[in-house]
Amino acid sequence: MMIRKIAVALTALTLSATLAHAEFPEREVLGVVMWGAGGATDTVARAINPAAEVALGKSIIVLNKSGGAGAISTAYVNTAAADGYTFLYGAENPQLHPIMGVGKLDYSNFYPVNILGRGVAVVVVPTASKYQTMGELMADIAANPGMVKMGSTGPGGLPSTVSALISNSAPFDVIAIPFGGEGPGLTAMLGGEVDFMPSGLSAASEQIKAGNMRALAVVNGEEIGPLPGVPAITDALPDMANFLPWGPFYGVFVKRDTADDIKAKYVAAFATAAADEGFQTLMTNRGNVLMGISGDEADAFLKKWQQVTAWALQDTGAAKVNPETLGIPRP
Figure 1 (tube, rainbow, N blue to C red):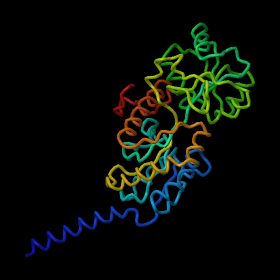
Figure 2: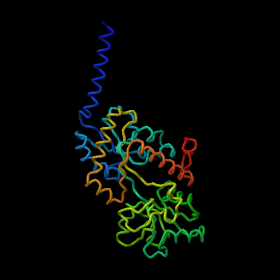
Figure 3: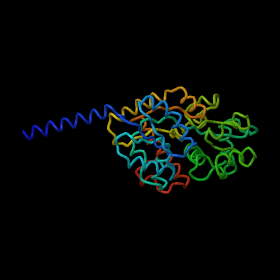
């Protein structure tokens, strides 16, 4: 009799847990944004949040929790219960935390509900530059090693990372001149202090639209909608394909050990939300490439992105920890 009572109780508990998941979410959920209000990650999160609320069927409270280059918010979500009621609106930064000595957590600890999109880098020159194509720039660099000046933001920044990727694809001996950000660097380029600069499209787009600078290539495997007619960098540097796609990215993550049915509800909700016309317009207007991948496909993207970027940082002397010691193979 006692054994039968225990069996009935266990069956009831199992049924209760199943029903609880079937009803998820029963209340509002918390979306933790990795960066502060008004930043790129926050803008993406707040743009998709209304459509995600409708698809999920409950309110999503957005909490900005910045600090430690995303480490504080990552740790906060990681210490929360794996019940689906707390998730992360994150960017690429945690994939570099172990390499930069910031922390041990990266996205291997989380399940990628949706990699919503990624930013794209461009190689730009002033409109009056003698370089009309990426091929011409590369030919001049090869003919005059150590003479062509490149705008940079210092080791570990986007320009130096793009520079490292190019260096692994072709001879690329340039003089890197550091500035306090992409904005100051681009301004200095327009003033003739440097010859060219790799930059995020979001930082360069207004000057490109105004006709003050010209994009020689997009750091992508194909042309992108916001820059029609600008060739992919692989046209001039085919070996760059080994490192692409690359760029800052934005996504939605829950703890890896969250129940599969809850993960599935999040995946379905954010797939629906990512198809929202308003969200897609905002992303493309900001120069982002829409991705909308999850699960195994997203994990493969995250792993490759970490490999490429970690070794680029290692090669430029910016990495604090050798990727090899972390089990990250060279791409």
